[in-house]
Length: 397
Image 1 (cartoon, helix red, strand yellow):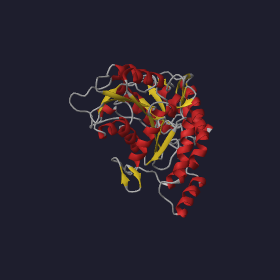
Image 2: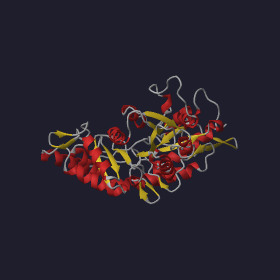
Image 3: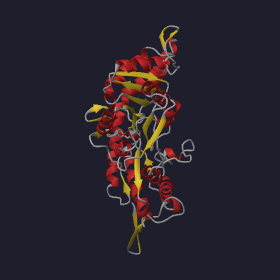
Image 4: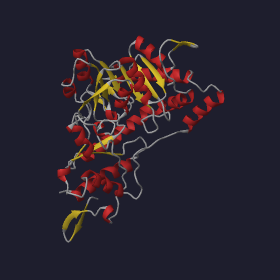
């Protein structure tokens, strides 16, 4: 219930944060990670074999992941940041300018710096939160050689627009798909597009190997280059032709990944079902907006972002968004902020002369996450919708 009747007058129900009864005594957690007996047994089997380093399980995971993402090649690696670095090393040169989203996680940008290239920050699309391709086009110079598009929160970027800009300007395309396992664009896996796509299997991602990552691509020469860089530039045992690293995944991790991959389709469907229900609940709540999926794309909801209109709610000391999420937490719904500041506001980049981004700065003040993971049951999804409605009703201006 989001209202109560007092003296014949309907009023907003008293919030739990103010001493009222919460929607749920049991908190709905913001994340849900499943390590099944199957996952554990797969890892133990590798450990018992004594063959722990990159081997047959890594190869099997690469084959399955390439097929699932519609990529021609896939290469496991140590983590999602290594995946970005491997793709950037193969496609970007020191001194290049690279168009990169100013809204998202810092690794997408910091690995450009690690390559010795210059990130050119691009603002976000205010509807999908992905890179604004029109803004990207306005920032192309003679030194621009690549564009990075992040499939943020599990929502594919406007791939057609990115690839058209790249074709027109002769740019390489790297897609950061760390949050977008099994996402699709125009009935194809996102691995079918661009020069390379990178993935993360961190513990809270839609599937996990603990740490771990993947690079997919569609060119055999590029696959060869990334493969060499992943393993010390070794063309044959103790023969090294280029500078490389030890960015290999272990077979223990790959075994966990293969086991997790068996359930990824089911987990993704659960996330999408929960997201549909939350979106339906939000449709009746003024001042809160559901995320917008890119046209032609399939969102896999690594995270579910709610956008709040601060003007629709009573003024508070500090951030309306933060007051709203504190009230949701008290009602029994976990929340998180992804992300509390735009990348240009990070100390690494917030230096004299930096161009800050209007939409990214606004998103940093108005977005918050509610749970959308595969472990939610129907009652928990109902609690999320009821809590959003209750808090919105009580805080309405």
